[in-house]
Image (cartoon, rainbow, N blue to C red; front, side, top):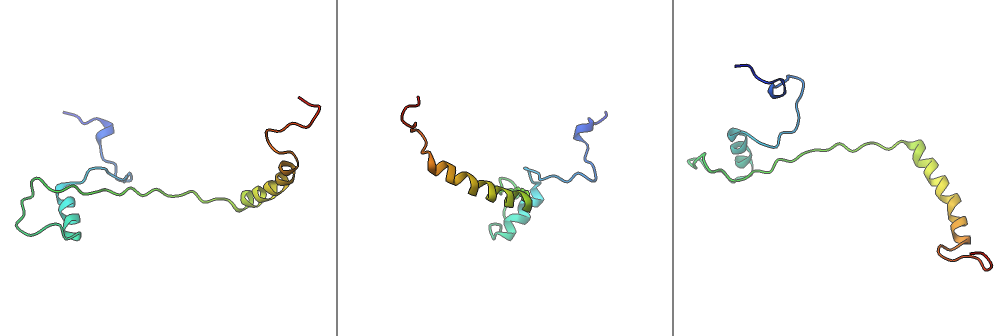
Length: 90
């Protein structure tokens, strides 16, 4: 019987897995001192799998431009408070 392409493990694709094998769970429990020799390998305690997410780096040019634009917009906003219209205009 052939295996579907989506189920094959590719050598280069290493993603964060949400399910650990029994051996991996026992290793993590040992590291956390929650596993004792002689315990049953069946009915293991839950082990949290942490997923790492890389944050995107901000570009310096956009930060500098953003600060300049905010400074220019502030005096205009102070001159005309929001929600109030000048007398004579509706």
